[in-house]
Amino acid sequence: MKISLVGLSGCGKTSIYLTTFAGKKPEQTVGAAPTIMYEIRRHPFLGLEVSIFDFGGQEQYRESYISDPKVFQGTDVLIPVVDLHEPESFDAAKEYFKQIIDLFTKNNIKPAVHIFFHKYDLKDYVKELLDTNLEKAKSIFLDLFSRWNPTFHVTSIYEQERLAEIFRDILVASYKSLEKHVETAQKQLSEIPARIIISDTSGNVIVHNVQGVSTGLQLRGDLRDFISACNNLRENFFMSESAEFTGRGLDGGKEISLHVFKFIIAVLIMKTQELDKKAQEKIDTLLSDMSMFADLVVRAHAEG
Ligand SMILES: Nc1nc2c(ncn2[C@@H]2O[C@H](COP(=O)(O)OP(=O)(O)O)[C@@H](O)[C@H]2O)c(=O)[nH]1
Ligand SMILES: [Mg+2]
Image (cartoon, rainbow, N blue to C red; front, side, top):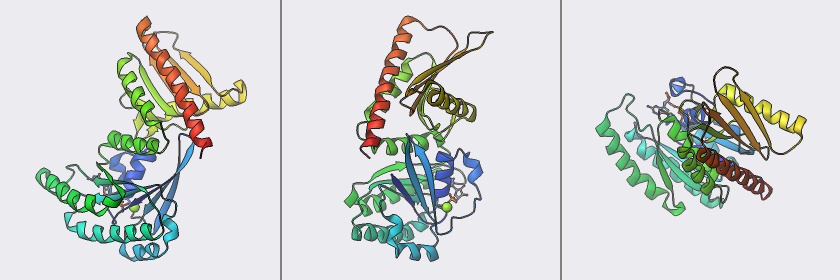
């Protein structure tokens, strides 16, 4: 699965990558060095390799990869990024995106297009202008990409949780039939009185009902290590595709349990008290759904 992030220099591509996939805080992106030419980053999600192409936006480099179509070959998802803090750059962005559209058309590449209207926040910016810029950007860029039925998202690295959800949805949408499960799980979680995190075994969070356990898609380090260690035990010790692990504090009633399904999905349940029968039933339903979800993911892999 190949995601290409494109946009003028400084529009926020590298920051989007770092905050969503690399566990960085938004503040850590300020003043980062501009990307030269392009960078490819690989990231496992639900066991599939996702490559994220971050194309440097500077003019002198744009020429070189625009004339070398290979770099865009195989793009499944194209994410044009528009900087809402720089309305005076919209025309230049439009020209650049036009070149990309021509290139894709010539090479018969038909990506799903998700336009990010980015930097929708008030860090060094005035609110009234932001909405004016957003309207202007919509009228230019939705039209520009209309042949591909673009979806758009209003984004900011300072809304890190939301941005991670947008990427999760884009990634999950490419696996047929998985979307519905994620939706259902989200609803189930809101009704269960325990803290639950569903992630893949590499620590990408899919859904959760706990604040502060993730940075972008990345699960907190200690929990990620726990999942990774248990997943190794599952393979080397239990030698089974799925396994369950439980830990309990000897003073106080805290309990943590981890279910690994089909080597790919991890469900972490944190309890601070005994749950009543009804809540326990809801957890059982969630677990059997996630077991099915894991089957679907494995099948999606097999179908390539
Ligand atoms: N206010 C604000 N600044 C952002 C946002 N995303 C990125 N930036 C800043 O924009 C600058 C350029 O970002 P960078 O990711 O290097 O842009 P790139 O050239 O497209 O890769 C950095 O100082 C970032 O901190 C955002 O959502 N809001
Ligand atoms: Mg960059």
